[in-house]
Every structure is written in C-alpha cells, then in structure tokens.
Amino acid sequence: MAELSFFDKVAARAGVSPEAAQPLTQATLRTLAERISGGEAAALAGHVANELSPLLVKGTEDPEAFGYDEFLRRIADRAGIDGGAAERGARAVLQTLHRVVGHREFTNAMAQLPADIRALAEPLPHGP
Image 1: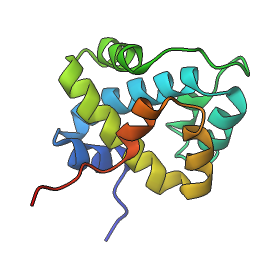
Image 2 (image 1 turned 90 degrees about the horizontal axis):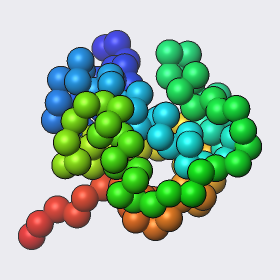
Image 3 (image 1 turned 30 degrees about the vertical axis):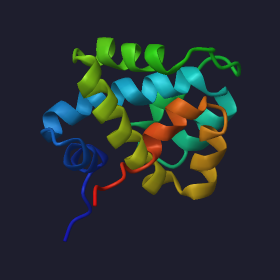
C-alpha cells in the first residue's frame, strides 16, 4: 500500500477532504513557524516533504510572541475558515507533524509554545 501523503493524513484526522486539508496544513505550518525559533522551524523542515518544508523556513531566528487565540486567528484567516475549523485543523496538522518528524524534534519545537497551543498536539480524550 502506498504511503498516504501528509494532506491525506491531516484530512483523515480533521474530517475534511484532502483538498481542504492542503490550505489548512499550509496555514498551520506557516503560523507555527512564526511562533517558534528559526532553528526549531528549520529542524522540523528537515523532516517533512519537500512541498511542505518551505512553509517552515523563516527569515529570522526570533519567534513572534502571540497566544492561542492569535494562533488560531492566523490559521483561520490564511485558510479562509472559521475558528472552530481552524482549531480542529491545527490539531490534525500538529498531530500529523508529530508522527512525521519524530518525538524529539517535535517536543523541542513544542517546548517554545504556550501550554494551550501545545495542547492542540495532544489527542482528544475519548469519552467513557
């Protein structure tokens, strides 16, 4: 069986089509790169497909300081979606990114984020 693309994996996690997952993924990775250091963004970029790595490259080492609401607002604006879809999509992208780049690299990058943004990368608990 052929390996599923990053977009296919995001689509499955977010419950959207692969076509809808593409702008969602692009918006999330671009916003993540703005929020973490250039070194961490570059480390993540080295582990993703060539089509995604430019989204994680930034011109400065310094991360921008913004919180959860701004993180989701930027994703929603870039992807042309509402806040709820941005939250579900960001969760799907970050969870997929974790599996693609590996635990150590992902944890290093997430350590630069506030706890509420880091929590997006955690699977939702299932009910009883």
